[in-house]
Image 1 (cartoon, one colour):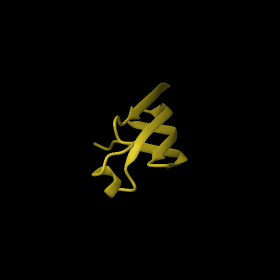
Image 2 (tube, helix red, strand yellow; image 1 turned 90 degrees about the horizontal axis):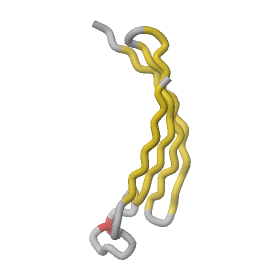
Image 3 (cartoon, one colour; image 1 turned 135 degrees about the vertical axis):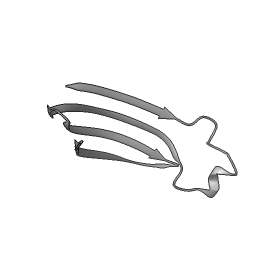
Image 4 (cartoon, rainbow, N blue to C red; image 1 turned 120 degrees about the vertical axis):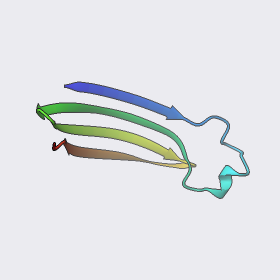
Length: 70
C-alpha cells in the first residue's frame, strides 16, 4: 500500500483584482490518500481532501479503481 499527502497554496491572492473575476479560484488544497494494488495492473485509490475557494471551502472523499489492459 502506498500513502500520499499533498498541499497546494496560492500566494498573494487575497486582494488581487484579476483573480476576483474568478469566484471559483482555488486558494488552497490539502489531500491525503492511499493506493492499494489489488492484483497486477489493478489498483484501488481512496482520497480525502479539503479545498478552499475564495472565502468558502468544502471537503471531499473519492474512491477510484484503476486498471490497465494490454
